[in-house]
Amino acid sequence: MQESKLIENFLSDSSDFIEEFKPAFVKYFINLCTSYDKFYSQETLKEVANTVYKDIFVVDIFITTFEKDIFKEMMEDGVMIGFLINRSMFFLLDSYIKETKKNTKCKEHIETIILLITEYISQFEKKICDKNRLQPLHVNFDTLENFSAGKNIIDVFKDIKDRGDNITFFNLYKGIPVQHHATIVDINDDEVAFRTIQTQEIAMQMDGAAYVLKDNNFDKHLKADIVYNNFANNTVVLNNFTYLLNMPATRREFIRVHPEIMAEVSLSSDGKLITKGKLFDLSVHGLGVVSEENNGIYAGAKIKLNFALSMLNKKKPSYINVHGEVLNIIEYSSSYRYCIKIYPKISQENKIIDYVKAREVEILDSLDKKLEDYMF
Image 1 (cartoon, rainbow, N blue to C red):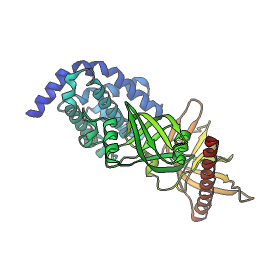
Image 2 (image 1 turned 135 degrees about the horizontal axis):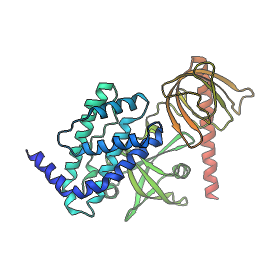
Image 3 (image 1 turned 90 degrees about the vertical axis):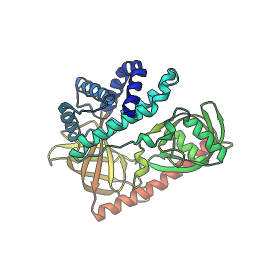
């Protein structure tokens, strides 16, 4: 009964926000989906987004037949629907927290909107994902203490600085993970100065952003913009800190390098139609291929791949012939990027391992040379 009263008060005090924010939520939902998959029409996605948004604010959620059918269809088509739902909920919550700065009435309802969002995700898991053997990237907002009205990211950094704790930066440089501890030197409004090693600073510059790994202080990974670097005293100043739902690069079991060779990859799904592309990245269990062609390749397709790997210390290239499965297709304005899991035999696997190890050495050497360019 108490819970119903809280929700009733929330809906009353937040009615303006709920109504005014709806177009922004719908637009975000559509853009997020189309950035990964352009198969569904804007009209269909708009209908889905409007239905989702309506259901969030219903006490007794009833997921309609339309929702069940369209979500099942989207999952079968390879759309990352769990990510789509959770990222949209994160966007809603983050926007509501910002609203509390303008509307003081909303400040007391943060726990209630977290309750509603968590309940929607729970119902989504039970009625959509469980029945279709798929689990979304569940976000348990109830445990995210950093979302409380009085404790934002900068406040957490202040606590870390006072305790003298470290944070850990993580970046990718041409596919190679670069990770090191950092201490907080100074905090000025929304800008935080950190001291870390120069190699990490260069990796940030090349990556175009800074990433902080989750730890005892943060339940989620963070992303931040780089204000400026001071390589002379090993400091970097960051701002615009935002939470990330997930960071797949931290979960990779094998290093994935970016080749700098003209490795042309041939993909064949039926033995007849060949799709040619350039090797984008490579690990012992997966690779990426960028191509201007499609020729009927789809997420889930079983394919064959043929390409050659050239190394500086070898006169002859290593020829790779493997079977693979297309996990995802990212469509750009004039090309496609195929994310592929591969199943190499031992002989092929050893060739890939040798190449990845050699490429890792090359990349780390080039990172050191980049540092010399910045220092002189």
